[in-house]
Image (tube, rainbow, N blue to C red; front, side, top):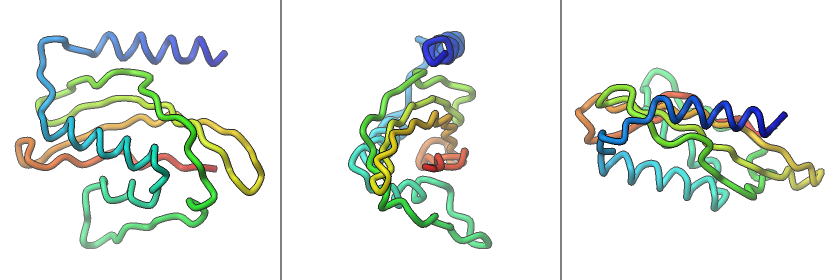
Length: 130
């Protein structure tokens, strides 16, 4: 079942990928930084990639210190939706350390810029580790 799901995700991602579109350098850097934050287990820092909204403060859930990420892998490559809107899907494997439960979350990411690529923000919510 997982194999079929991943094959569908990869197929859908391949349909959207434009090999002639260049990924903005700042977006590439933002994506690498986000991946590094997740891989190194600084999960509370994932929320810094969301666009700040002054009227809605960031709510970091409790229990992130109980999560140990074991793998971060792209399930679909980065694809351009518009010049300032890109998407990719990552699969994150993790362990809940207090129970030694292995889990996986599929993280559908949409990254946007509202200033012509100077700053990139995650539009979709960060994944929940349950």
